[in-house]
Image (cartoon, rainbow, N blue to C red):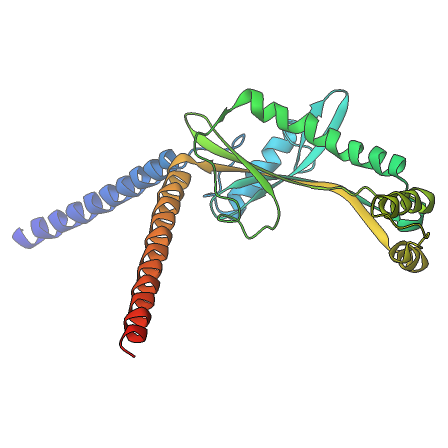
Length: 266
């Protein structure tokens, strides 16, 4: 009888242990989900790939996304932005460019192409200027992303940071007559009376390379804690760099003093 009672007691304890373990896991999952709230629509970078895919499908069905893209409708224009998940961010990206033969360009056509892509930036960026607060401290140029030559603005609200990066690919290239006029004017200002040929333009025209015009936009949504920790790290790196530079300058000064003393001892 005692053995039977002991047996049921052990079974009961084991059952309770399993229930408590399950409850703990649910609580841990709940805490984790709460700690990583959605950053864009219902999406979070801390989702699994399957969760991200499933949420994206739901957003497609609810017309929040179109074939996985977010459609920004502005000024009777539709901009289709890719939506991707990275380690610490949900990222919207937009890229558009075209290649034009060098020989077909003039200042007028260059200006038209440049204005075309600048207008895209002027359509999209003011949305973020208006909706979010520009952060007092900005990401140091070249100190954050391996993506080259992007210009960044860091925005924030009470829940997250938004890093808006862009690159305009613009060129202003004249035709043969326009470039020759510029060269003649330069020769006149330098006091040269002889007319010289624009050899660089001639070489480029003979090869007729393709010139790229376009724009690249990358918008990252981050948790506040992640960017805050990076800003602290940047401050430390800058401080360490200044301290290192100060130490190097002190060593150089000591070395110069030693050289002077050495010369005086001769």
